[in-house]
Length: 68
Image (tube, rainbow, N blue to C red; front, side, top):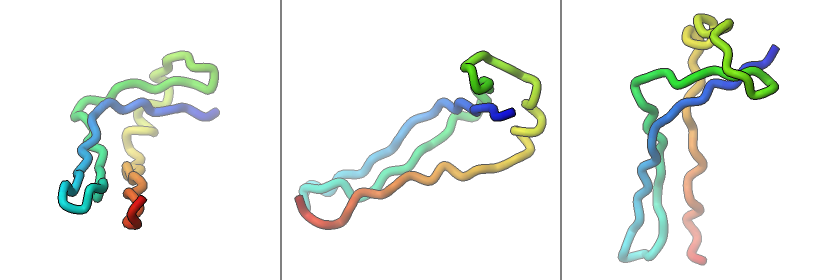
């Protein structure tokens, strides 16, 4: 079975006003665990220990460095 971990938080984006372009961004997760849902979108707590003991980094794609 596959479950989805839904994490709340916010995104920090940095804009260079001299270059007039976005230069970086990162996701900051909240301290609280939001929820798990199954493949059909139903909330579940059945695998919460398994998911909480596993780590997956929140990697975000950085903006391209070329000018538009």
